[in-house]
Figure 1: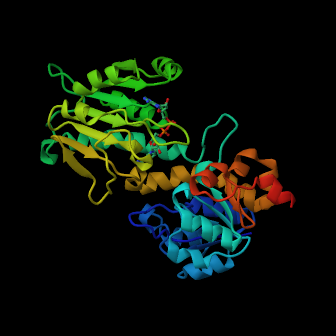
Figure 2: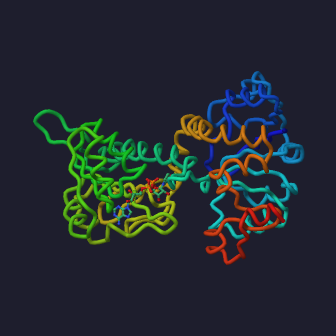
Figure 3: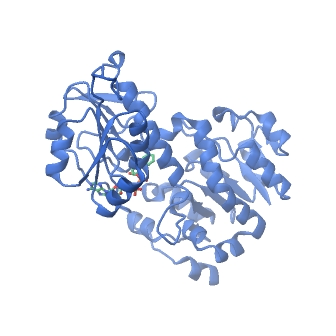
Length: 372
Ligand SMILES: NC(=O)c1ccc[n+]([C@@H]2O[C@H](COP(=O)([O-])OP(=O)(O)OC[C@H]3O[C@@H](n4cnc5c(N)ncnc54)[C@H](O)[C@@H]3O)[C@@H](O)[C@H]2O)c1
């Protein structure tokens, strides 16, 4: 199979779908990798490393799309890329189609087999191709919190972990799934006092067994959240309801109750945010202040560490890409229910039910399209 890897063109996107090591795995398995020049540059992987791994490097995105049986990417396509797609080409990438009517229409019109990383789902409900990005975002959240507490960033001037004789900062983490747990691990490692709040008591039970350090757990309700937020130096917003918008768990009044120079990192901003005063920001202009409280609400936090993010993403996508390349689309999908859930469009049909509900486009189950 010819596997095409275009350079990402989305603003501030420095990741690339494959590392040179992954290129070597694919070429040594008998596949051809065609990668666009400079595709890996933002992640610290120069063209030469891909060429040494057996990939062909081209300076033309058109050539990548023209020749590849499968396009292996990171982010959803931008309108300038739509015309490059070919009928029955496999597209393996993040898509987030529920917000992308025009892209969905283009994928259906072109008859592309679009497999979205974010809907590949294991039988236990987990989303294996999203997990590493949540882990990174949780860890980045605490790095950013420590940075914005600094005096030079107009923060409160407190050291997250304190020192002997001076108490540490209080970090309140609301929603303790993948993002929240990773934020908690780093906060505890830096010596902060941590309060973990989640609506799921089993999750709190689990965390109190596996995490070590100075932390308390609270069940999520407005009373507990208001009290915790009032004493917080840092609030991490990471609450999510699967398939829906996150609940607003921190109100404007709660933000007002925080000490000036405190920091809110609303990681859930990519789904709308779980803090009332949140609006999306970017890496080039990441923070704003409301009622004296610094808000960091960047929608693609892993983008700040592209080298780690590229490797972490490639670690989890490569086994699926290899399966698609080795077995072909039909056999791979029939033998792997998780991968089948990733298929969003096939043969001009929309095969993902939540996307169909969000966009108002008719839904056709994948097995019906495949058998017909
Ligand atoms: N900004 C970024 O760059 C970035 C990167 C990765 C993930 N995210 C976002 O971070 C958010 C969290 O992702 P995740 O992977 O940790 O999700 P997750 O599903 O693993 O965890 C969400 C947690 O929120 C809890 N929760 C739900 N409602 C709650 C409530 N009312 N109060 C308290 N807790 C509640 C759930 O019980 C669960 O434990 C998502 O919105 C995700 O899209 C953002």
